[in-house]
Length: 629
Image (cartoon, rainbow, N blue to C red; front, side, top):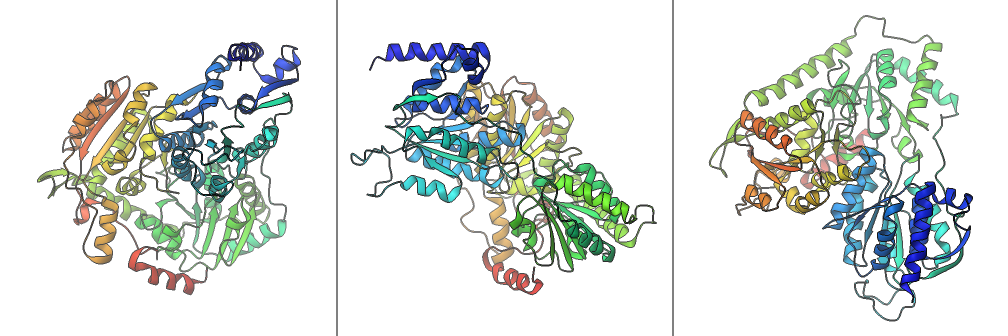
């Protein structure tokens, strides 16, 4: 094969695209013919570029060497490649790039274990509705014998079976099917009702295979699609009838409510309702707003759980039915009617006794508000009700409860044999510091995440990202790479336990390589604190969740040139000083904080009720059946 000639022709195409700004413009300008003989991988890169995808992250292997060559040549056309040291990290970074910045990236891997790692990491994008392309090398279609790293069974399309269980998938068995593959990928990653990852399997022999007379104008382009208002006005009338009967309405919000702040507050005033949030949406309702009862559920709040427990009407907006509140023993005990706003029919109709309002939540909320005005229903001008005042009392109780922990920031810890900061006090200091510099916060799974739900006090949305769908350890630290990939980056602080940090410590290398400016705060309690807490609550003893190995995280992290490390010490003041020093660094900084873990009630912000884990399952299931929701 004359690789020199092929490379020269590719560079000519790259130059034409760079000059005109797009593949379509280059064809219309006559710089490129509409029909060309190009390889499958070049068609893939051109097709993705046509969708605006120019950022690739992952690890090359023998299953993706040809893709690497295409990406190398196409850099002048605006493509950027971020080679990292773990496929799970790549998956998390791409998820955050979409979730926080609205940019779709492609994760690339080799065949076999690399693809399996990225597939596992894609749980986060699947759980949080992130549109990400996953490009996996796969076994050859000629079936010559076992390909290195394929699933070693004599059966076709085994990896396609795996990915198809997770989400929309396609195997490029035939190169000429590229346009179809890209169209399905476009529909998955740009779905206005909920984006999804798309898994594109690339057999190693079809990647460099030639597509003869490939139509360069045949690749799909993104189109503007939107969700619409629910057209059934009878459902809105039913909703108004239910609202008239209610005396204790609560609005429960999830991830689909992010752009509905004004509508939610207007509706809450009209109904004399209070608002309870899920963990993903701090700031959608300003923390200081009097109708904000903050978070609800097993890691909820006194006020949020009181509102859900006592409510007779639940208006659910953009939220899935999640076990940690629905089955926590704190929610919906007195609800007579649900009104559920969601783009997915299954979610909108999840509860019994539900009026499902399917479509764009913001548009439908606006219509309900308008209909309420037409019906002359408005409690906002009336004197405050006992429902609102009772909820406000519980909110004050929750604020007082938290303040006690902040006012008593240290406890004696048996592991460290000294007084150290508690998780609530340490997280509070980091959250306050992040607010002072307008930094975005990422919370890793575990005790840090659980206490973080309860600590954050965001006044605007999209300042906190916490991956609760899969609760993937290592997500937060991996998310920092997204700031290096984003067109308009924000300073980020990843709050992580030492266990989550050790899941993806390669962030230290990759952050330096890709010039990340951000911070990791490691909360070290030498155990899986969240699981120890569950074990104590359920069985009275913890087991298998402690670390006996002492790790010097300051020395470990400082071994990577370019990473600046600081000890957070054992007081709020020393932690603040460390954060200030870390922020001054023009790169990645790490702050290490030893934190208390034990059964002292001031050591955490508490868990509420029971949920469907361990020996609580029978009780939870029995209550769920009795409530009939």
